[in-house]
Amino acid sequence: MIPHNFPSPSIQIIGHGLAGAILAETLSQAGLRVSVYDDGGVSSSQVAAGMFTPLTGRRLIPSWSLEHAMPAVEQFYPSLEKKLGSTFFHPCSTLRIFRSLDEQAEWIKNRENGFTKPLSGDALPFQSSFGGCEIVGGGWVDLPLMLEGLTQRRKEKQEWGKLEAADITVWAEGVRASENPLWKDVGWRNAHGDILTLKIPDLPEDCIYNFGKFLVPLGNQKFRCGATYAWDECSPAPRAQGRQELEAEVRSFLKLPFEVLDHRAGIRPVAVARVPVAGPHPEEISQWIFNGFGSKGVLMAPWMAECVLAKITQGKELPKETRAARRMQRQRDRAKTYNR
Ligand SMILES: Cc1cc2nc3c(=O)[nH]c(=O)nc-3n(C[C@H](O)[C@H](O)[C@H](O)COP(=O)(O)OP(=O)(O)OC[C@H]3O[C@@H](n4cnc5c(N)ncnc54)[C@H](O)[C@@H]3O)c2cc1C
Image 1 (cartoon, rainbow, N blue to C red):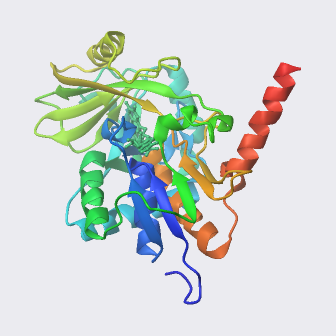
Image 2: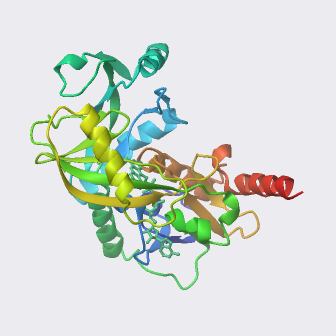
Image 3: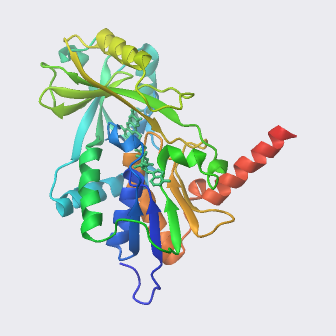
């Protein structure tokens, strides 16, 4: 809770994707005056697979600030499930199937990190000549379900809509930040992603599978399959070539028949520095940002929301890599160098 004598500022949050929603819940829970406004535009959170994992990339190394982010995940989502009375947090292992000797070698090099166990690929219905490993400590969140519950909660608490005047406005606009004159200097490199829903009748549904692409079990023989990365695509519409790429990858690894039920797409808000961006604008100090979660919104947003809360209530500095003012200054300096 905020200190007894703390003059609570009013906070307008713009955007109710996972970033705005998690921040609003964190600030409201701490007793701050919050209101959320969302105009119903495109939302990456509505198409995301919702996965979180301790290890990142082909090399399977721990994510940036994992030691802070994972405890926040383990606290935030289960406690929110209790508040909302619904089940959207699904911790489970990920079976990583190696596609090459290189991938296997990277795992052997990094496996002392404690997040993986060896896996015998023989029993799996995948082409797995290079074996694989089991990654523990991850899982997935049903984001549309969580956001529906949080929208309802904000409305019930009368924390939904535009404030006449706010002490702080926090922009959690997702990809639209790159068109907002306030935030264009953060530097954006957004990434389009296609994602399919597949029906795979005979695949066990107790874990996530990853073979470069992923299969997330949704229940009832359905799996979310993704995702592609297209860096120069500005429209969030699904792309035929994205579907082809995903289908081809599944066909070449999975030994089971499957059917495509659905094809969707979205754009990940990726900042050039590849870590989230938060805090006040360098010149307009009542204007804040909470964005740039890339492919790691589920993992990073609960901890980053706690950091923003601590900044507002205690003046505690945000992690330096994430500070908006610092990031924008760097981008501006870079632009000056290039334009010379
Ligand atoms: C195919 C795909 C798969 C993904 N898989 C994963 C995954 O497995 N795990 C993971 O962590 N991440 C994943 N992501 C990334 C994830 O979607 C993003 O990190 C996250 O959803 C970003 O949330 P956000 O709230 O910043 O943006 P969004 O979800 O896009 O929400 C922004 C919201 O702000 C509103 N808005 C914007 N501007 C305004 C304005 N001016 N006024 C009012 N409202 C406004 C919009 O209507 C929208 O509701 C995936 C993304 C894609 C595309």
